[in-house]
Image 1 (cartoon, helix red, strand yellow):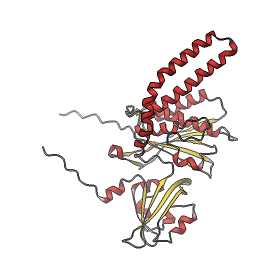
Image 2: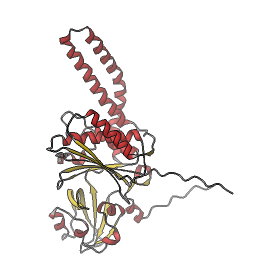
Image 3: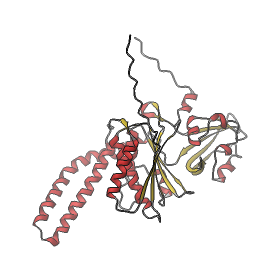
Image 4: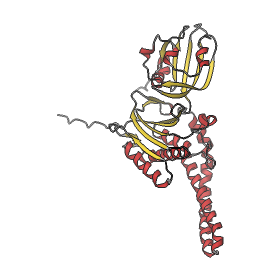
Length: 364
């Protein structure tokens, strides 16, 4: 049997597979073509957008971007630009690239700020976490001995001196927890996935957060009861949700009426090109964790999913990095956005559907 011949993808297939939005506009700034990612981002079909002015299709807040449309031969790179889609604000990075062979024509790209889309970052995270994770394994054994020793010593100390032993035990537990998170980030084998009811995972996560949260934050649920099961690791999905809901509660706790909302819905047509898997993955199930806190500092928004980046004074910056890794392990993706109009911060997760295999019909 001869080996299969690999056919080189066409340029159209390459553009269609891009994970960021791409639009082609002519010398009069009219949209000529849009790729699938642009249709998803802007909630508009390429057919309906064709022939319309760019500003009609992309509702941009920044007047400088609109003004740049008149400069048909000039390139542009703009970060953290506000656009409005379906009545809510999204923050995107924008590029305009003139085409020298076709004067006045430009290629425009839009990519979500904070969107977990760059699979190439997996290698970077692995390089940052891999060696410390190996070292962490060697550290945990002596830590356990220190903890046991502190507990033993505390029994022989007078009551006034036992606080020091308890402090040692608490610090050892804190370091051990940090090491556990580092090891999870360095783990290369993902947990197996199966059909999972997203609402059961959400309710379990909310219950866990409520048990450990003595604050006055109201956590509410807005579910689409018709959603099918997702393809995920139940344990990993719960861990992701616990992290996000806990963070949302912390962020909202300083608000006058602190509120956290967990929503689910079906998003038709969303497709993620999983480069590391060599295939396109449909991600129609959306789970959103929203809070009415002050939001993430602007200088951190582009890096919030990176290891060791945090806005918390006592944080290690591994929680959201772990969330991103767990989502990728389940072929999902996660992103965040700040809606200044409503004063809400949204973390949106997208997951694939668990499609049940049909039973083979009996042969005659």
